[in-house]
Image (tube, rainbow, N blue to C red):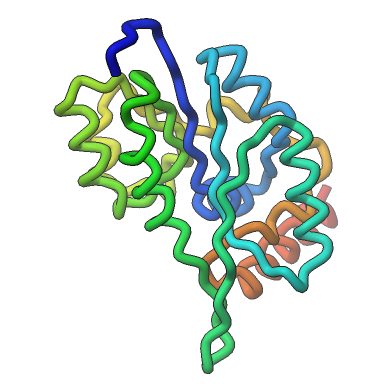
Length: 197
């Protein structure tokens, strides 16, 4: 971009972040998260990529809430396959828009641990775009950690800043890759945890 003014965009892979924290026993408070991204990194735009099921009213209500917080929603319709599995091609849209919007930003925050983004991230680094990766260390591809090095932050370290007080929340349903069974696993693990307290 011609303008040398610092412009930061944040790109969130909802599936990866939600399952990552859910598996660790906590949930992201998305109001706190966007406040953190805007306050800490002066993110001009925070783009949220997730799957959407038009028949899921709870999910649709959640997205309305995200929009009111200031997120720019990038939603991909969830497809149901013959075997009952559900998936939305969120990765492709996020990759495409990272490149499509490249002339609009010179700093970027990425929230994903998916190794499928390796090539686009490597390109950004090679073109001198300042990038930072925030994700759950346990579920982040090794090659991404090696690529970002000191510019990788374990989301677990930010738990005290962005965690949701209530363990179970509807936002889990905004995921895109076979999310039905994963939701049940997350909720059951939370119930067991609560019973042991």
